Image (cartoon, rainbow, N blue to C red; front, side):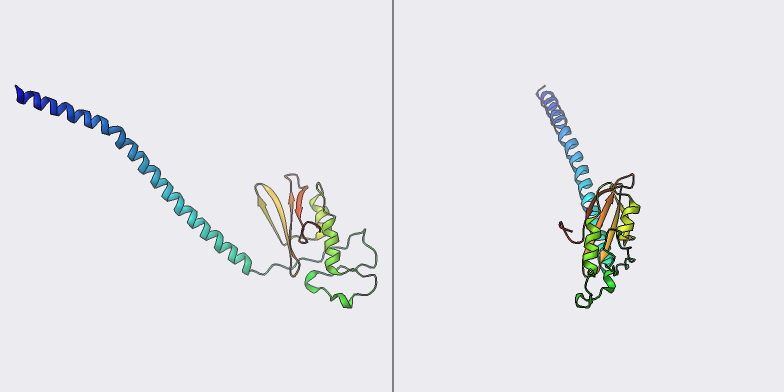
Length: 171
């Protein structure tokens, strides 16, 4: 009889240990699955970062297309001459009454205001070097060799929402 009790007691103890270990096993398998997902996401982030770095290197190496010469704004003095930044004449060559190309460009950028249409912006700045979408908003990107880069953000209705002048906050 003692043997039967010991056998029964052992089976009961084994059953209790098995039941007690089941949640731990379930938790550890869920943890393992989560770890696999985290590892997969880490790998994906590394791959995406490498792709972004490659694209940034390509963009930096590619020459920026020359911006067409924008028309001189009508508010400018008649003597002002707008010369594209890539063919800018030295300041010493400018005659009395002429505005340097950089000054003319700075003036045009300072006239960009919220709610202006894309046509109004194109009249002031010319065609953008590049156009793209960020978070559903159209962005016009301008690059001026030797001066800097600027961008104009538009609303979904094609109106200026903000700008970043190539001349910083004052331009």
